[in-house]
Structures are given as C-alpha cells and as structure tokens.
Amino acid sequence: MQMMHEFLSANRGTLIARCRDKVALRSPGVVKEELAHGVTVFLDQLIQTLMAERTDDPQRSLQVSGVAGGVSAVSEIGDSATRHGRELMGHGFTVEEVVHDYGDLCQAISDMAFETGTPIGVDEFRTLNRCLDNAIASAVTEYTHQREIEATDRHTQALNERLGIFAHELRNMLFAAKLAQRAIKAGDVGANGATAGVLDRALAGMSKLIDRSLAEVRITAGMPAQRQRFSLAEFIAEIKLSATMEAQSRGCLFSAPAVDPSLALDADRDLMLAAVGNLLQNAFKFSRADGGVASLQASAKDEHILIDVQDNGPGLSDAAMQALFQPFTQAGDDRSGMGLGLTISRRSVELNGGTLNVRRAPDGGCVFTIAMPGHTLR
Image (cartoon, rainbow, N blue to C red; front, side, top):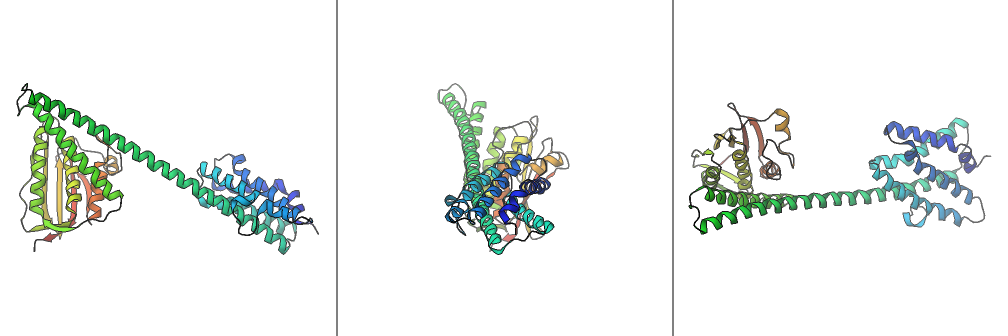
C-alpha cells in the first residue's frame, strides 16, 4: 500500500497548483508565487514528518512538526508558519484567508486521495491534522501580533500628527495675540481698533481649540457623559456672549433670538458647549466674506429640542455634506484648523443621546441642526 508521504511526493506539483488556483479565486491579482510559498514549505515539512514517523527516530518528526497543540517556537512548521502569517499580513490578507491558506491543502489532499482511490491511514490522517493545527495556530498568532503592531503604529502616527497640528495652531494664535498685546501696550494703536480685533480673534481661537481638544480627549477616552438638567435659555445666553465677540472680530452679523425659559436640556453641559461652539466657529468661518451672517436658534418641536446654527456661505454639494463629519475633512477655501471640529461636535451630541445633521439653507449656506430629547425645568 502506498504510504501517504509517497502519495504527497508523487503529486506535489498538482497539489500546489490546486492550492494556487483556490487562493487566486479568493484573491485575484495577487502574485501566485507569493500565494504558494507557505503551502509549498508546509507540504515539504508534512512529507518530512510522515517519513520520520516511518523510521526508528520518531523524535525527528516532532522537531519538524511539533507535538499536538504545540507553539510556534518548538518546531520547523511553527517557525515557517509564523513567517508565513507575517507575510500574509504584509500583503493585506484577512485572518480568514490565513486559515484558508492551509485549509486549501487539506482539501486538495482529500480530493486527490478520493479521485485516485488512495487510502489514508488513521495515524497518517492524525499526523496531517496535527501539522495543520500547529501551522494554523502559529500563522494566526503571528498575524494577530503583526496586526496589533500595525494598529498601534497607526494610532501613534495619528496622535502625533494631531498633536503637531494642535501645537502649530496654538502657537500661531498665541504669537498673534502677543504681537497685538505688545502693540496695544506700547500705545501705538487704540484698544478698540483692528489690532484689538486680532487679539480678540486669537484669544477666541485658543479658547475654541482648547475646548475642542478637551472634548475629544473625553470622547476618545470613553468617559461617560456627566449629565445634568439645565436651562436651555441660560445655555444659549452663555454661548451668545462669547459668540458675539467672535462674530464682531470677524466682521460677521450674528443673531441669537430669545429662548423659551421653560425649556431644558438633560446633557453634559461641557460637551454640548463644545459642540455648539464648534458649529458657530464653523459658521463664522464660512459665512460670506463681504457680508457674513450667522444665527443660533433653539426651539422645541415634537418632544425634541432643536438647536440650529446657520451661515450664509456658498453652501456645499451633497457629496461634500456627506463627508463633512469625517475626521480631518475640510470644505471651502479656508483650510485653517484640523478638520476635527464637526467630527467632535457630532460625537459630543451623540454621546448625549442626540443627533447632528446638516442641510442646505433656502437662501444659501448651511444649517446644522442638533436634535436633543426635550425637557422642561422642574
């Protein structure tokens, strides 16, 4: 009776070709030599294992393929499978494809044995399963390890980029504020002139930048919202005070009509302040340069509280509006900022049980609407 290692040696080329075809069907366009590398090495090691088990030195079998349930560091199969898992990760394969890569060979062996009428002994089939088990475990373990390293690297790179942009923005605004303050103190300019406006804009920008960054830290850290019930009218009045100063510094008309004093929000006040503040900063930024107009309105409708922030800018296309809330997305000619304000606003609102959406205004510009569960003051 033909031994399994003889059967595998005799059909080695056909088995490898069948595995290549299976992988190519799942991952078209990938170089076949790269796909076959792991299977080729594993097949040769499986043959060595089966041959060693037919000799007087079965220990050689364990050196090649390891004991049942073994780990990557104690066998040749484990070592090569570890390298193969790393390679597959590098080529962009999924973990499912890593498992399939070895499963294909098992399927090819079973199919060919059935087609040729070649019986596979119980002991030989047990060895095949042991080799496959150790190889898959080693490959998946290394694949997962490499994926975690890659994810950590991406996170670190993104964090460093955001910190760099934050520091750059803060430095620029601080530098502008220092120059304006120096000119005012020297008596070269008046306290209510254009230079004072530069100082106001710089201070307002730093305040918004810090508020936005603190909100992002809280959201990213998964800190729960510190909810409390508070007056909507007082909330809007607080925002109006700082927003009016920023609007004046930008030469933008700003309005915020009075709000029903009985209405209330049940939310994390700081996160909501950051969310609305970001929307207003966005409105001032993208309103028309030759006559900017922005507004903040809050009202109750259908058991919800709606907070609308509207600008009179040129507006956006449907595609641009869909992408607005993605991180590091910026629309319009003004590319100042990190492109994170709207992302943080939406996350802050959603963390408080609300929604944030955008639509085109009837007379141009955009309307951002926060919808929150409605409450009244007790």
